[in-house]
Image (cartoon, rainbow, N blue to C red; front, top):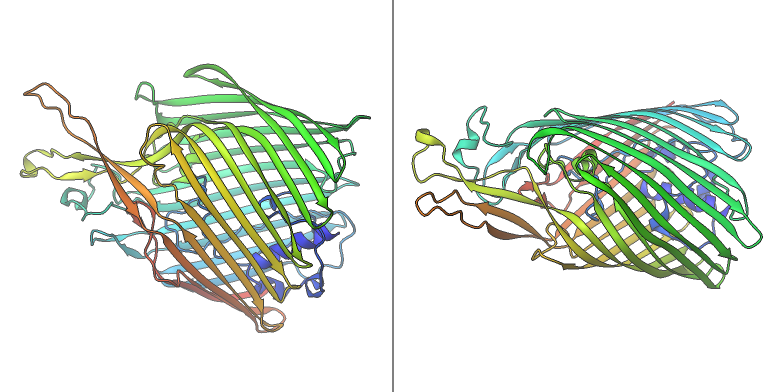
Length: 595
């Protein structure tokens, strides 16, 4: 029960309280003592809700761990889709069916969102979620050019959640459609040839779209204990397509098994994945082709010990089949030790593991949407990772965590821009201009990364809530001079305050440390001396980013509420990717209706 309360509280902290005002959960008005150690980084594990919780409009910056969900123009505003809720008992009387939201903002920004939830029976929920957010504004580049930087984000999801005696079956069908321009250009003014109408030198000014449809099915037991036998599974299929002609089929099935024995508990996660990418440039022969790969995965382990001291020991094994490579087998350890010297006060943990990272097409496209749309990226292998730390409580309602990890990774992709002398023929007089492509290319390096993380979470039963997180990174590269585009540190702070029963306010501060960007200049062949000059590596500094967002909602009646969000209140036009500045101060305001 305490874990349940904590999960519900955290969802309420991060989201805008407008929906909570329209359909308030009375558990948020009680004084709550959290008696379990808080681990914010694991909050995406199972959460048990009595009813579906609708997250209101929420400005969020991407977490800069380099594997991030990027948006075409980071505008400090994103809307989280409604997640399928889970139920484990007879739910209380349903107070409403859904929510409609509509708003507008500067940069010609319309916004609309629709939520619908129907308690089909005492143990099943049916829901629909749809959202549109777009912008048609202009942005000023560092070189002085003012360019069109439109984007659109559209989401639709239909889901069904069915509760059985102990298990939850969740099914969803979703579709996302995102559009944006390759609007950026690094450092200098945009060269004249790129400003000509219908230029085909590179992607500058080209419109791109990402469309993704998917099916997810999940069977699990949220209340599972280590001495319970269990079987569950996850199934995912996605179809991804771009306007530039690339598409991807991705499927994954993973089974989760658990069986207690006299000496401990046996654990097994095993599955298979398949991906096919089409109309990409093969990195081996530079031809437009398809890439097919599949991998089998098994993670057998055994759990020994009790609550105060326990050990999970096992292996992770992958068998990878790629049409362009010989079959590979990857093996990594999987060991975790937990020790609780003082129950409900402090816990110490340490572990060793590793990971095979599939850099399939859609993963890279969402990580950096401005990457070369015909990319074909190597998979990475985190050979070994050492991690550990401790978490505990400062008081009844304040939890903390301090942790570290040290990872050794092969074939990590890094992004750079390509620059060259453009010889455009007689239409462009000498000297020929120096032009940079504004779609990112990829190089690889093996590197070691050390990370320190600190987190603090405080709640006062919904009146004042705080969540702070900070990370510090040290990189050791094998060949490259820098860990290109990776920050030295990042941090964020979220504060929420219920001024009255009707008025709620919150603020977010996002910080990203300095980064290094790379431009690689290649020179044309010197036919007179029959030689090719070596590429020139140019390093550029990306300043630390500071982003302040303030949001609030006011409950006008039991059905109507007003909301507003002031984003990038620091008026910074920092660059999310080199040459791609984000929108400066922007706002969004509107109304919502609960029905």
